Length: 97
Length: 487
Image 1 (cartoon, chains in turn green, brown):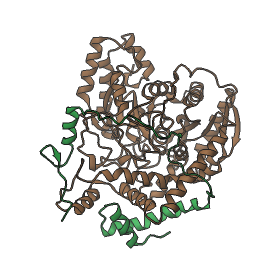
Image 2 (tube, each protein chain N blue to C red):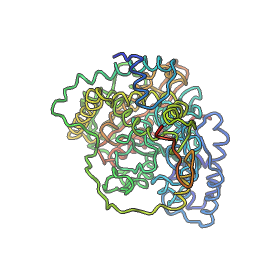
Image 3 (spheres, rainbow over the protein chains, first blue to last red):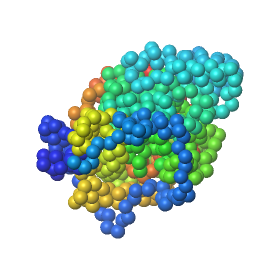
Image 4 (tube, rainbow over the protein chains, first blue to last red):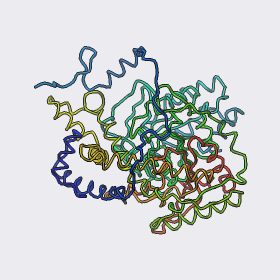
């Protein structure tokens, strides 16, 4: 299955991933060859088969919905990992133009 | 006595008998790192001062009763370690210092096990050679022209080169077992849900699992016993009983039913690897096991399932690296430009390739054909293993189709690199436990050197005890684990 450069651009946009033109060409080729390999899955009959995401069979794990305090040191530490902080809040870019 | 060459068991005995101090043991490991790491590059960060300070404190207290007390270890740089840089081998977290520790690290801290530092890895654990690390490749201690395998290449090379007594890795598709095989050490991937993933930087959440890398099977059993268990902070951990793994090792394997799946001996694998594994199977038979040929025809789809599910989960998990919350930021004013530029500069090519693949498989119009089909085939693979485990107690296969390959040999062709995990991936798909142990040596393709071969033993979910017992019996009868690289 060959991916076009247009499709590559579209996927890169969905993934919010900046790619240059050389990378678009390389990825189109490499991803197409990986998708060709993956195509073999179509041979497997899966009618009436339930998909698995949780492999040990655990189901909903509930806990009481109680707010837990965050250690002050951890709170400060987490803020320190953010690229930009203002008034003890993480600073984000403008969302509205 | 070479202190850094000891196993956990030997080091604990020595510390208890005061044959040597904890400072001497820790210093021996640090000296070995100093001497060899410029060639091997196992470590991204070495925490020399805190390690020695803890060792000194433990010597003063003089108590080494808990199983890992005073034992120096290395942790893959994927485990959050409070106050110590945790890079995941990526530029995007190059300067990330988490204010908290992963549950497994906290457990080892409580034991007073001594962390020597953080080890190199493929970026975000994506790779089979440790070549995708932003911090340069780790080299195989048996031949520094070759890869150690991956993604836990640094953790495995550190154990193989006696830079530590044991280490921790993670295994999403073979990232503990494949490098353990290529470097001639023991690597255990427990059952999914056996060990907490809290504080472990996520790659593919339904497949990731934490495990030990050690110099002997007994050591793997000791570490597993200490890191296992239910964790309120990881809702996928399971409240299953934790046996005394080390105590159960010495039972014999007479009558143990071992399945040999014929699909795991494929065209294109190194003949020397197949030969070593066949000889190992004969040895297991000699030790009293019953060898039964079985068939797992769906295993051949394991890698295809993996390369849909893993990138899908990876692309979702990695969406959090947005240049705003934490980690590297391009620092641009425009929101979209900031996203694009941060992720273009912060992620290496393999990560971007997998994010693209995952985004594609989950995108509108392709979800059913790719992700959903893969999740259904996953059900069938799980059922097929379950059916086989009604006939046998464990399965034996090669860990890797080849011995260690040369640096750069597979980097140009992603698919060739992915095939390095062909025997380990189906085990993660089915959530099973598996161990890789040394089973001899085979020539490199060019005949230049003899390199380690690994034997994979696979068990039922939550039955680590049986595979550890089989591995221990084989190890004690063959002693391959005593061979060490000349470095």
